[in-house]
Amino acid sequence: MHVCTPRPGRRPGGNSPKRTGYGKSTISEALAGRRLPTWAVTEALATVLGADQDEVRELWVKARGPVTAQATPDWLTFVRSDIPELATGISFVDACAAAANDPAKAIASSWEVLRLTAGQISHAFYNAIPGMWSSHIVDTFRRAEEDGRLPAGAAAVANVVHYHHVGANIRPPEIPSTPELLQIVILAYRLAWQANDILSKRTTQN
Image (cartoon, rainbow, N blue to C red; front, side, top):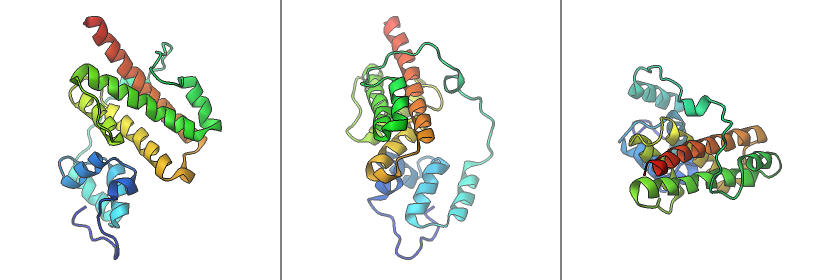
C-alpha cells in the first residue's frame, strides 16, 4: 500500500484507526508490515489513504500467495443446545430481540460479552487484564488463538464485532440493519460460548 499513490489532499495520519473503524494495534500492525492484514483491513486503509483499490487488491493478492483450503472450525458451524450462562447483563435471546427494537443495545451487548470474556481469558491464562483500548480486547483473542488456547477464527470474529462496535460509536446513523445485527450478536456470543467452554475445562482440570 505504501507504493500506491494517494489522491491529492489525502495523506496518512494519526486518525487512520478511527477513520477505518479498526483498532490502533490492527492498523499499526498493517502499516508496519509485520504480517499481511486481512483484505477487509487493507480495503479500509486504502479508502482512508486514497489509494487505488484495484492496485492495492492486486498487490494484496500477490502478497497473500496461493490460497489453500482450510477446514471450517467446528465451533462456528455446529448448532448448540447447551447454551452456557455468561457473565453479562443481557442473555443471548434478549440480545437477539434487541437487534429489532434497540440496535444500540444489541451492539453494546455483543461487545460487552466479548469484553468480559477477554478479561476472563487474560486473567486465566496470562495473569493480567486487557489494556484500556477496545483494540486490546481483540489483541487478547488474537494472542489466545496464536497460543493455541482458542480455536482458529477467534481473533477474526472478535475483530468483526469490534469493527461494528467502533462504527456504532463514531457513526451512530450507520448502525447496521436488523439482519446484520443478528449476525453480529450470534458471532459475539458464539465466541464467548467457545471461550467459556475452554475456561470451564481449565477450571475443572485445576
